[in-house]
Length: 270
Ligand code: ZN
Image 1 (tube, rainbow, N blue to C red):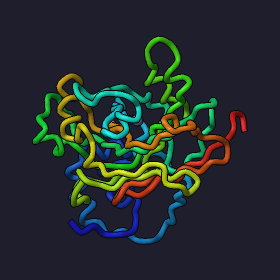
Image 2 (cartoon, protein in one colour):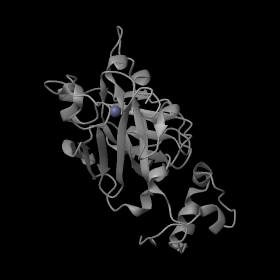
Image 3 (cartoon, rainbow, N blue to C red):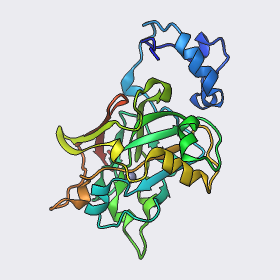
């Protein structure tokens, strides 16, 4: 599909049909896709990209998957057989693509991830049907406070990954119809310009259709729900010596055809 370039205000250009809330757009996703393909965006009404929020700010559920790239599972010292490691990032952690994130502690780590946005209610979806319930894809950062995540007898994955700002997503939601090969995208993360993670999403242990099948075998998935699909090797806490994010750092998270996040970090209270 060839898409028009530029931008427009969906609420006014659509004559109120779709409203201004991106989540309401997902309730009529197929109609919205068809409308967008015919839309004629102009260049008026400049967008201040630095002020963008998360494309989907209020998902009912956020699923996240750990250890979904073989090299990362190995660097973390885990076997990759069995079932996907599933946890949540609480929705209050979501942030825009250019957010400046407060550093809450001494062991703040990075994880660039492909994020799947659901486009339909789904339960017990078979892998071969799974892409049909996806609205689109975007870039995500699964920021992680390793001190909180690994405190106590068993890991606190969800809590350690849910401080305010710990879920930058965007820069936009790219509709699946706009992607020629959504199952194989280059993914990378740069810290202060230095490449720290680099892989292809085709290297996932559990590919997107398999994740949707396994999640929906238990939970009902809803339009606007997000799935963080796991990070490749190269995170900070598995380096020798370990490396963590601190005030003044600049993190770029990039996925082929989806764009990039550009996040900075500030001291607590700054
Ligand atoms: Zn992660």
